[in-house]
Image (tube, rainbow, N blue to C red; front, side, top):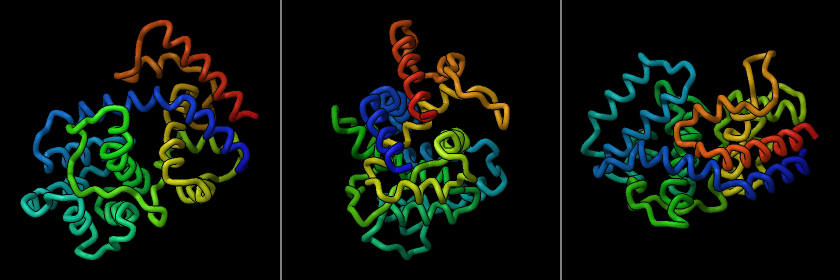
Amino acid sequence: MKQKLEEIKKFLKHNSTYNKELQIQFALRSIGKYNNAFDKLIALLYDTANTQSQPKISVLAIFFKDIYKEKNNINSFYSFLKYINNGEFDRNIPFKSLYKGLKSQKGWGEKTSALFVKNIYNYHYNFQLDKERKELKIWDDVPKINEDDKLYLPVDSVIKVIFNTLSPANWTFHNINKSLQSFSNEDIILFDDLWFWGFITQNGTGKNRKLEWNEDKYWMIKDSCKDECTINEIKNKAKSFLELIRG
């Protein structure tokens, strides 16, 4: 399994520009239009919560009502960490603390909490590498991640199908992340691209799901490049991806 994951990581690294550009465009539309840090935070929280297939609206509403009451007290990364962890968190592992604190909130699960944390890190660091994008930074005090800290892969049904194709098992958020524990945090961000390649190579749902190039899904990604040359390029790479996970 480790060797197969290494091969997949190489594919994802070599083809990382496709999903990165999609995520940047999403981020610019999500929080880029706001100037106020709290407004950026709220926009990202809403957009992340709404990635759930069946969001628990009644309890999420409580979460958002409560956070608006603390609007004047949440003005930095660490003040937000303090808020979602009821005042106590480990400063040595701020990103893991962010995940744990958010997951403990009403309506937030493992996948959405991991996705929010990954986005915070991407927006402040990875998406700033080739070009400075100040509009994607929410706070000035977001630290770089250290080797003792932890990012989690946001595991959904698409990624579970990929892992089940690699090795049939009862794959969950926990055992998928456990299988990735020997990889670095930057590798985890690379593995998040599995969602993109998995989404456009899966057709149907449940037991009827097939692994095949799904051009309709690609066209339903709002920010995907729609010129014929790029689509054919991604189609060929998608086929290579399927060959790789099928072995």
